[in-house]
Image (tube, rainbow, N blue to C red; front, side, top):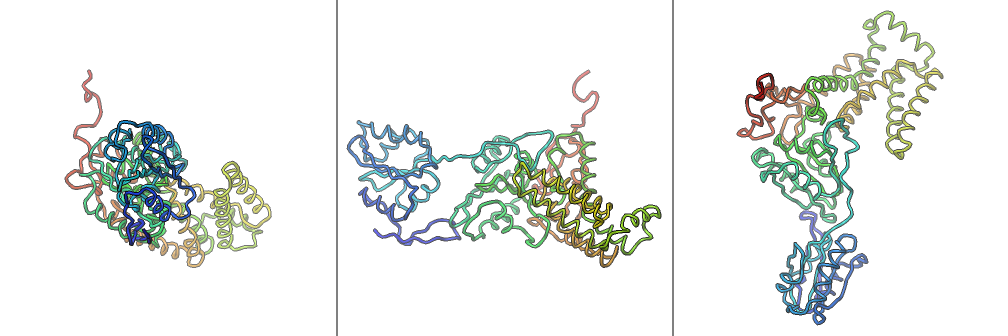
Length: 514
């Protein structure tokens, strides 16, 4: 009973050229299993007798199956049975196995697929079918607060590496049958489960079709994180700006689903992808919706301006000192000139050196162990900055500029957008140092043009700023009161845009009181 196997990246499954059909002889079935699995020493073969008479073999992978359930609900009732025809599969399923999920398989191929997912396989002598027991279980991390998306107010629950746990968290928040989940298997070796979650009636059918078509065309041997999916499905792979939003927060994913967007979950990672993404959504924080509207609007407005300053401030500083001294007030110019009197490097080189040093310190702090990473970053910045100024290598204003731009970049709620700002800062400095303010303006215009052309699953990245949609401006640079945000954004279907009834504005006499 020879078995030939090959791997197909298109389907992400093991395919058999000559399928091995299970036969009535147990030894031949076990031999076929061992041939297909190869030298897999972590697979356990347990021989026992059902009712003391019929031979059986339980195949499982220890550590991926519930050992207690196997002992109590599989081996014990089967071995102690006396009054059932033991080689009758229906009798075994209905009367001997108190297991919720029990399926049948007729080929070794089907059994192998379930085995590597953690589900034990039961082979019985005299039966041409195997029983697949839904007892997969493995160690997983508990639900915790996300470390990269902290909030002062709101839920503290985050996604984990288990896709079943993540889906259950979405189900618990959205208790509606309209929440739909479609599963895909991607990766010829990993067979990673990728789920598309959306709310039927809110998400556009065109968006769902686009998401599914992009996933189905992926042909790869492994998917280990959402970054694989993001890189293989984005609209413009060479853009520094992220075109898909990722988050570990359950409340953010739920809010996105209720807006008509689609959430992609990948087994083995706590990050989920949200599509489509726009610049406005990437600059929204969870706290914005849990705090008062005036406070949230102020923070959003501040966030937009600090990110702009973080991108252009070093370039403007270099351009002004090199080409446009007349733009600086006299006293300030004298102060800067006195600070640069002993500096041997030109302003452009000085800024580039400090910018690169800041990036090195930040990267070092991320890669070091958490206990010493923050200390090294802070102490390193202080020591390097103070030593450089004392040695006369850089001026004090440069240290202030670089420190401010670095801190301002941290105001971005999603660090993927902050990465884009950091990347664009360097070419803008080069343009400012070579062409002055004209070069900075050219760079800003080029960035704005690129943003206007950028799309995320067909949705303009600058929407609703460009193209301008007045009805959707209430949840962009400012957050309007909740009773005014009665319409969902353009991600949702036209016939289901209203999410809030009229007359919800609070005030005296509106709550039924005296």
